Length: 132
Figure 1 (spheres, rainbow, N blue to C red):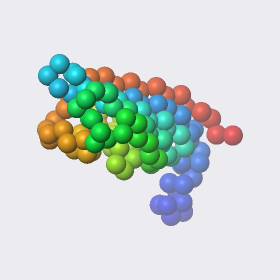
Figure 2: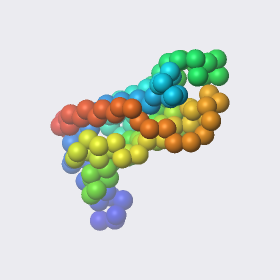
Figure 3: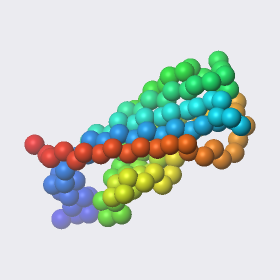
């Protein structure tokens, strides 16, 4: 059996994933602006929605954006990688629910100066569903 077909067989035998990731960044000295991104994950894909609040995002960015992306599970390490171009790249540890990495180009798109923005809050909810 080739490596590809072994991978396909393992994926078919393992339960599918239904989960939600929410990430919220507070921006500014007083947190006067915020960005929240939610990703609904199911069967190897994700639907991502970004919502901005506050004047710092202004007219440069619509208050709501949406995109589809990929959800790639690495069962050996227990990691889930999300990639929705233009909105979010993230890695979650499925065993602990910890958000290990999150990156978005939306700060740059809104003209907010570059740098590292701390995540104010993240939430991971997952419920494996059986294959039927």
